[in-house]
Length: 156
Image 1: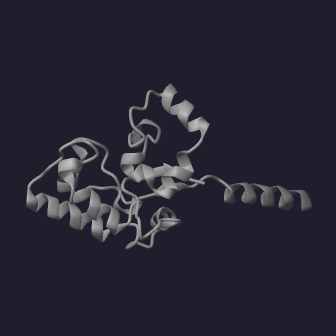
Image 2: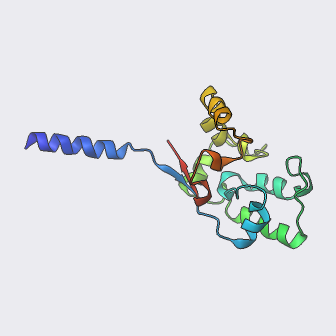
């Protein structure tokens, strides 16, 4: 009997330490998928605070070296979508993690400079992996995170 209880405790303990997925609500909005997903993965608003999204979306004519301009109505829609679901607005586990250590006075200018991204991807192992997988950009999440478009990322 004691052996059975001990084994059950070990199994339950192992279950509690399994890796969870960092979850974002999948983006299903057709306007967002069309406006943003045409060129890159649709990034989750909860990855950045409102100030970051304002800076990024209000400067689409210089979108990381590209002209990603869209009509004013669509741009306003995209901005509103991101502002309403940003990391500093939502209280989800993922949003809280992405806001951790963000300097609100000088918010990240892109997802790959956000403290959460840097913490999770900043070592030699990732550099080697990106080279091995021929990842063209650190923003190419789907190259390593196969469920990224569904809002799932491996997490600690």
